[in-house]
Length: 146
Image (tube, rainbow, N blue to C red; front, top):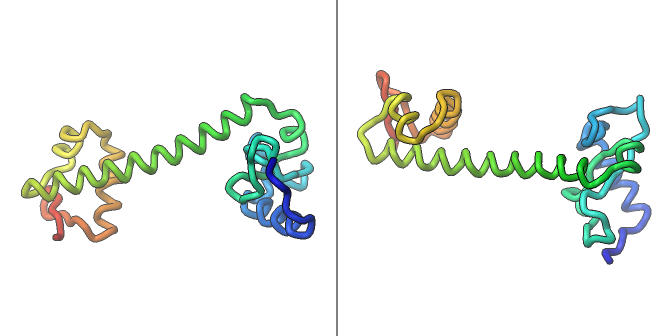
């Protein structure tokens, strides 16, 4: 079983977590001062969790006391989905950059067809590549700056 940190350190960490989460329950979205907030371990200490800030979230009293596996899994799934989305976008960005480099320029619609991505995702990827200084637009085609 993991050992809890000393009380003085815990209170300091508790305030850091509440401030990080903007004094809002990460489970139900209610915020102080309307409700009493606590700091909850995503993975409980008895299950091998730690007092690491990544394992702690702000939680209202009702959610912390009444939480069940369902509520916990919803939060964890949401966080995993965000991580997976970032990994996916980074990989897709590399693939798009690679195809622009290999060809002598591509239009937005050519990129969409080649990579089977939506117009909005194509726009996000191209904007991030342009801001990173990796591509530039000449006419209606995108070219690599390398």
